[in-house]
Length: 223
Length: 218
Image (cartoon, rainbow over all chains, first blue to last red; front, side):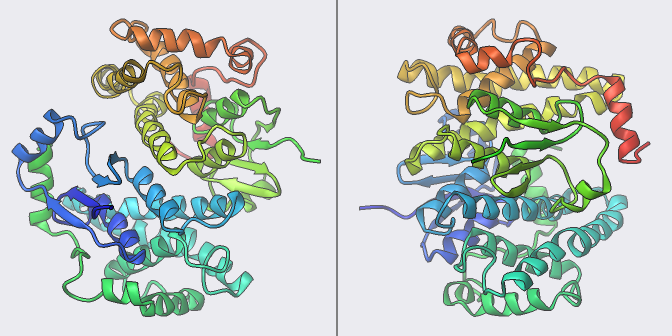
């Protein structure tokens, strides 16, 4: 009898949001514990729950998993979102890694100093428009299929959907030159599990605000 | 008939070194293009970045994707999903530590002093204790599944690389010392550690200046 996975993180997107997306897409219900105080975090470390003293932490199948990529990789493998062979995995991995590089810029954005924010925002838009989105536009155009790899939904599609919406929050017209990605976004939005995740009341977290930033800094004592 | 994997990168460690380690550990011969990037190669880079490895008809980019494929192909990556999970966690931890070292040569002399202290501190308090404990708890020769995996290769690379900067780093870790000796004497790894192998020297200032010129950095 397996219990629900349990996510331990701040009450916000950060590095855990991709995990929420993937579990939601796989229709896996999960519990969440939110870190609001430094005391909670210190206790987790003292208990030996955090292998490298860092969150995200996901308790799943008897393991206390850390390291976002390891967690996502396990979930993708377990719920059939990781292609059918080594080569499909290779393409999924390449796409996911590229998307992660872009997501990382968005993730770090709220923590950048005010004077750097304009520059960072421009860089996010530039990278999305010139480095990353063209790759996925081309991939979809070339094979004409609904999904990036192997004609079935995979981790790469979920991750791409997440990053498209995240960039659009900053640059609403970012998909204007990418018709394939627009169609992809519509298709993905209509998948029942994702449609549900995009509705209010789901575990999806809102964009980070000042309260989120100050909570993270306080809990990690990185003033 | 499969051809040798072909590595495209600078003549230096950087992000490609872990890939060289893993292929060497697997006993795979490789070809390297260690030169100024040609436009032709540049056009073949999915996200305009190296490392790039031509392997099995693919032009693979993104270090982790490449390492994952090599590990899977050459039996250095358990089949069981849970054992893979442990390998992934251990690898990611080591990678975080290696990232501190990878950027070291780019820092100013002042920053390097601080970074050196940080590397020593993180290795000794955050990372190496974890692997010491794993080896202590199960008493096996390797980190996962009682056989050589990607996690072991990544760990020995990290140990040797940290030791170059902090020679006494293993003084409090007897099991890691034994691990280092054991894994170094595995035939393929022993060969890689000898002069004339594809292993690259620590990054130095000449390499930094060269890379900066390529990427038009100041």
